[in-house]
Amino acid sequence: MSFDFPPCPDIALPLQQHPHYARAVAQMGGRCAATDIISPQGGVMGTAQWVLRRIGPLRVAWLPRGPIWGPDMPSAFVRRALRGPVAGIPPRSLRLVTFETPGDATGLRLASGHSIAELDLTAKPETLRAAMHGKWRNRLCRAERAGLSVTHRPFDPGSDAPLLALEMSQRRIRRYRALSPGFTLAFARAAPRATRIFELREHGECAAFMLFLLHGSAATYHVGWTGPAGRSVSAHNLLLWRAMLWLRHSGITRLDLGRVDTLRAPGLARFKLGSGARIRRIGPTCLLI
Image (cartoon, rainbow, N blue to C red; front, side, top):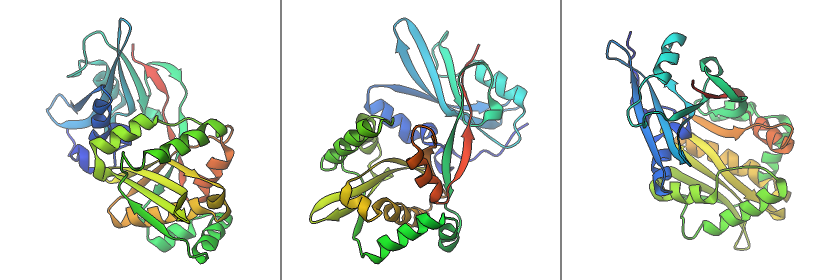
C-alpha cells in the first residue's frame, strides 16, 4: 500500500510538525528528528517530527501533534510504525506522542486530549464574515467605523521584544499558559519571513497586537496583547479580521487559534469561537510501551 503524500513543507501541517519548529528548537539548543514513515512496499505513508530531550539519565522522544498520515491509514500500521525503529531517535528512548487525531491514540495514556479552534480560510471573505457570531461581528463593525490604523509586518526580535514583555505581564494576571518568549524570538530568527505581527497604535504607543506564525499553508495565532485603549475599541476583533484576510490572500488555508478552555479561560474561548472558528479535538498524550 502506498499513498501520494505531499512534501512536508507544502501542506497544512501543525506548527509542531513543520521544519520551522525544528529550526526554532535548534536555535534554543534543542534537537528534533524528522522522518518519513515508509510502508513495506516503499511508499511514504506519513511524516513525524520528534523533539529529542534528555532528562537526567532518560532519553525522551516526544512527538507533538503527530504523526501526519496519508488518507485511510490502517490502525495496525499506525501502531507498528510508531513502535518500530525510527531514524534519528536514540535506542531505548522513551517515546511520548501527543496524537493529532484521537482515533490514532495507542499506548499508555498520560494526559487526555484537548480542543482547539480552527478557521478554514479557503472560504470567501463574505462567507467568513457571515460565520461570525452576531456580537463578535458587531464589535468588528464598530472598530471598522472608528477608522483605526492597523499595520502588519514580520516580527523583529530586536525592536519587537518589548511587546512580548507586555504579553508576559498579561499572562501572569490572567493565569494562562503559552510558549515562552524565548521560543518566539528563536522562531523569528530561524524563519523571519514566517512571522506576522498585526498592531494597532494610538498616539505612537501600541494599543494591541496579535502575532501569527506561518508554517506551510497553515498559520497559528501565537500570542497577543491589548491594553485598556485597545479593549475599548475591540481592537482584537479588528486585528484578527485583518489577519484572516491577509493570510488568506497569502495562500494560507487554515488558521489555528489554539486551545479552547471554557473552564480556565472562558472569555478567550468565546472570542475564538465567536470569530467563526470550529472546534476540533486533539488526541491524548500517550507513552508507547
